[in-house]
Image (cartoon, rainbow, N blue to C red):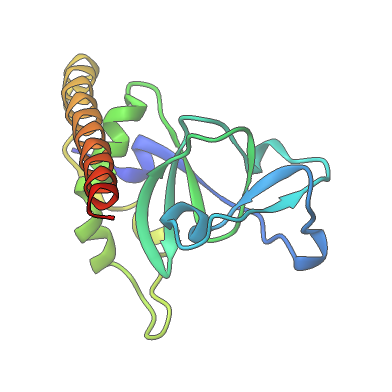
Length: 171
């Protein structure tokens, strides 16, 4: 049993002002981009501090309004406020930890504060305890969960394609 603060570092994003938004540069990852509520990105064309940089494969935890876990799959991007980039500690498998956080979402949501816009304070988050197996077991579990996740995504894609074909046939 270890705390989430021992298992990873949580880097909050930058509070990019609208005056810093543009049409070129690094996409600014906002919560609505992660949830699919908005596909269009704002961009930042300045010098991106490394602490705000997100690379493909990084785990992101939105901690305000929408409390959820995501894996970034795009190009290098800029991390906006209200989202943590999760950097796992030595001895913690990144993929396993993403699944662990997803599994712990009800506990994290229960920690949330606020009446109009729920949020989880970092001070509360880092003190949550979690059972973590040894690294070799984490890797095995992560492989199984990733394979299941991939199969679900492929199945959903086939269902969407089948629905499109069915709609086309009806027309």
